[in-house]
Length: 201
Image 1 (cartoon, one colour):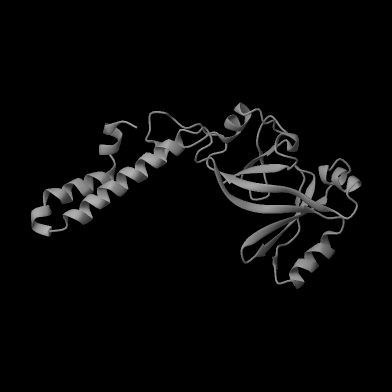
Image 2 (tube, rainbow, N blue to C red):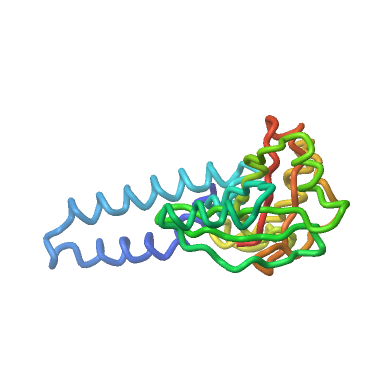
């Protein structure tokens, strides 16, 4: 990290300005400690941001569960206290979806829509249903960041970055998912056996 980058940091400027008036505030030790904290925080962030995936992954959005009986599964989670949404068809993905809101998590119930549904193929192998995939939010799934803007403002091209790591995707382009946002699925064979959905946050 260059000295210019550090000195342009707003928190650093504020701390330096405070030092100028140190003789009046009598808080030298506190101000210097603040400067050290800014330096440490900035350097650590800069080091982390050098990783190609830094800032890419966000929070876990939901866990998706395939079910042969959507109404039965929805009722089960409703009886557990979950807030259950209406059933919504997603023809582009070949599924019906129902979302279950829990205090600290969200579930997506999936049921086949059409004979060529990928969920039907999953249920053919797993008659009782089960966990189908996890969904992780990402910062800018397609828009590439620019090296000309500060690292703390930079956006990332999620799909391009995971492909650089040799991770295959299940489609060439993103699709609009159940939340009305672009999504992309990563091949489970490249993700430790787990199907991962990336969704624009």
